[in-house]
Image 1 (tube, rainbow, N blue to C red):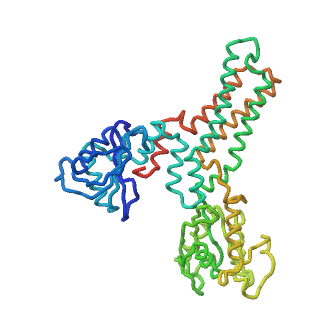
Image 2: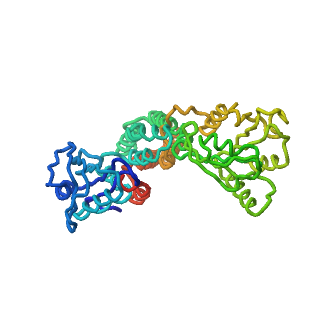
Image 3: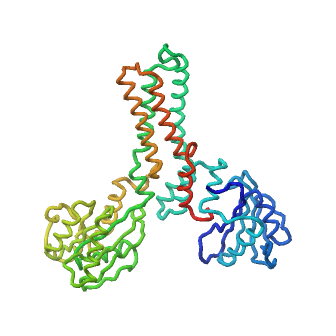
Amino acid sequence: MFSPSDTIVAIATPPGLGGIGVVRVSGSDARAIGAAILADGSPLAPRHATYTRVVGGKGQDGAPIDRVVATFFPGPHSYTGEDVLEISAHGSAPVLEAIVGAAMSEGARLAEPGEFTLRAFLNGRIDLVQAEAVADLVNAVTPLQARAAFDQLEGTLTGAIASIDAAVFDLVARLEASVDFPGEGYHFIEASEVAAALQRVRGEIDRLLADASRGRIVREGRQVVIAGKPNVGKSSLFNHLAGAARAIVTEIPGTTRDLVSETIDIGGVRVCLVDTAGQRVPADAVEAQGVTRAVGAASVADLVVVVLDRSAPLSEEDAMVLQRTARAARMIVANKCDLPAAWEGGAPGVGAVMDVSLKTGAGASEMKQALGDALLLGRASRDVPGITNARHIALMERAGSAVTRAAAALEASGGGLAEEFVLADLQEARAAIEEVTGKRTTEDVLQEIFSRFCIGK
């Protein structure tokens, strides 16, 4: 695990050219390092921006590196809870790397991924739920993802979990007090009160988990694969959803021979959209490999959009695609509805289809809305899910199971179950709840969580 006593430094902005890049220094030596690498030892008033220059540090020539704006945040009122120096320079990689080098020459070490946020967690600035929300907010692609992550960063999920934990803690405290008076039954709380309290706690957990499936979809995104025989409009649908001509569209069947992907926003969900080769008896080895990849992609997709041609009779190739995707979650789209229909109604053995013309745009907006509804399990995208992280969901489900076991055992005994047995389940529930927020967690879990952060955050 990282050493929390070192002073650390890293570039806090993404790589690449930009108007501004930020270098962050955190630790007990941050102010001294600033005095050493800022021209003329520029005095740094707390939380005031200072326009100055950065120069090379020890072992360097002391030549100016860049004109910068430096801001000093004394701990504990900083992002990490330590003394923090943030240097805003021009967003050139060589310039930012030179500033990092100057700080390292004065005793800082390069930060590990997520180490700034880890220090914020260790110093009590945020809990583990909020720390994970920082990464989710940085990685958000859609507005709904960003809203869900920001709500958690603001503490909405922490508050809901704290309410559940407080109720369980109250039960544990009163039952433990009762244990000190053996032979007198439930001394500080009646068995009926325990049963009612357990039911309330289970209800709160259930309400929190009610939108968990949709929450995971919002956080993790989904993969959508477009499948069909050649020349039905798969690439046209891909380009329409992507909002750009990413896939080549021609009248020649078999134009697409490999997987083409694009990350897009559909109804608030981050979607990895995949266009595939037309599925038919391949004409050559290259097309055969494309068809194999198309079938493989469809088999692991979260949703398959099967495209049919409304203007041509359904063929054996259409039947083959429908059969291959029969077990998948799918949506059937009938393209070319602007042309005379060669078949009516739904696809045989499949049911309803969505009519669309990707040439004229007819039905396209309705199709996209239906796609978003399918991805979000029918819930409106404006509703921000309270819980989105698989780790949090698993732990709260474990806590709920422990509470359910306690309630079932108490009911089965007619209220005569010894307090110790109820306590054992409630202690397990509290352990799971505290692991969510990080009050009780292992170093391995922390290492796994923070190693997924970018350097500088």
